[in-house]
Length: 367
Ligand SMILES: *Cc1c(COP(=O)(O)O)cnc(C)c1O
Image 1 (cartoon, protein in one colour):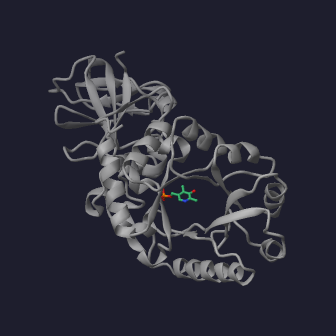
Image 2 (image 1 turned 90 degrees about the vertical axis):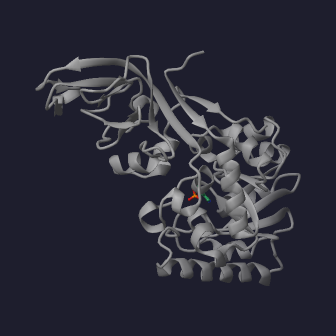
């Protein structure tokens, strides 16, 4: 089928990023594939990661973990967003490890017939998930009905390596691990680092690291840490779409909803067959597309299914041509970083929000 928009996922880029991150950390690597693998496709990316040497897969939701298992993933899987009342029995039967961050969830899991493999989540200073106020109460409970295989926490500011909060969280992590050791719980797995910490804080590697954005070849923060290229990462997703229409227009025409832009000279406009329904931010301004070796900037507001670019008066582009919305930037195309900056957001959100109407194409096939 000919598509009008597709996200091309380069499996060899993911493999190369995993190899780099494993070398940098020197410990086991958990590949984070939550949220449809940051838009790259949950199952396919999970299979690529497994083939490429990831030791674990990590997801937020139980249903994500089950989808990976039912598609044949063999390596261990951790799911970390299971509120009390979740179907822990299904997690057990699919051999999925779960994170526990509340007394309520701990008690439910302890009450199951067969022992669950759990990772205790610690709040070491991000004040989001993990044990904080219930910590002392947890340490009083009976751990004989669970198998504690891991303990973990998450950095709030790993993309700002000089911030003191990083060393504070690291110290708190060690203290809470010692609290567990004092009651005889010594989990073999200790994991704290996300992508930014893997790249910039080697002292936080412990026995495993969790790589999300960097595995997809994107920098956790281009201002603080540098761009993909400077970090040795290869962006895995190239997003492209077809020009639905190319039209010649005169000077002074209002373009799009709200007439927020007006043509300043006679030019060729390209109507790109992709819009905010596909994850292109409605407010994006200053990004655009790449065609015939040139950038063409967005003009006017992005609409639901389409946006308009100014191709310039001399463009050779024709209705039906493919344009690159973002790629690795090596030929001058816009990047996910550029789209993030153009939308007051970050590369994470740009790739993750690419919608289900956009086909994912995998090449080269490594599985
Ligand atoms: C999303 C997530 C990660 C991955 O973070 P990146 O910055 O993409 O590497 C790691 N750990 C947890 C708990 C997460 O929720």
